[in-house]
Amino acid sequence: MKISIIGAGCVGSVIAEQLVDKKDVNVSFIAEGVYKERLIDKGITVNGRRFNMPLLMKGQYPDVVFVCVKSYDLEKACEDLMPFVSRETIIIPLLNSISPTPFIQSVFPENRVLFGYISGIDSCADSGSFRYNIAGDLHFGYANNETVCDELLRIKKVFDDTDFCVYIDADMIKGVWKKWMLNIGANQVSALTEADYLQFSQIPEIGKVLMLAMQELLILAGYENVELSTKDVLEIMEYLTTYPYPKKTSMLQDIQERRKTEIDYISGDLLKLSRKWNCPCPVNLTMYYLIKSKEKAYLP
Image 1 (spheres, rainbow, N blue to C red):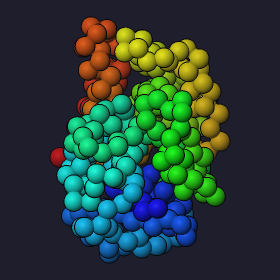
Image 2: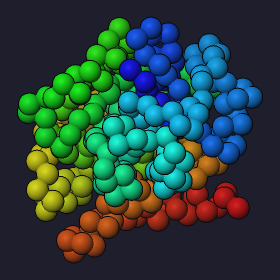
Image 3: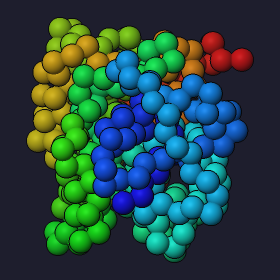
């Protein structure tokens, strides 16, 4: 199977590292501009191992593309994908929030654009390379997968004998929303407190804010007919407070490295639904304003 990855960051780099040695998989990156130059010049280093991943050439079409860019780069990434996508290419976004799949579907209406997300991964950037302890759980599929089609099983099989656990959720809409709920809590709270996952269980006040933020999203899920429940909130809390490593959320990493954050897509998408349903979300609105202020204080 021919698999390409666009976005050689904390997620894309781990996927590449896990698949590069598989004999039944042809893996490549799709990149343009400075990202292409960087991959040609420096390759990619994951957990101390450096390797040069081939770059897809125009006129070559992968069977599957994993989209692993930041949300604010998605529109440009879709432009860069245009020359490399045939009608048969399956596109799997692994971004935060609920908006990436609908957006990509609008750009590539003739393609099969799946829902996807990754959870449990603790990859982080480290002086130009990447390191991780846990590859995490990879989820993808159509909106409803009560009957799993052969093409999804073939993609799942690619990840046999890797460190990923792969799932085809029966209800991918719920899965994507649940991952978004985790990001609504963990990303924002960590960005403001600079606490890692181990500290989530050590500071009671953090747990209270996590719950408040996620409960606001839970109310909106009801308006949108997404079957999330208090049980899902409690499961996320259990995960966040028992994680075995000092994982830093992607938004905390962005804040510490003085980079642009994904706040406009993580809580920004929530605030759009808040306005749509005239349902106030004061906790998320406050955190949104605080993180935007923090970001603007260091960005040029």
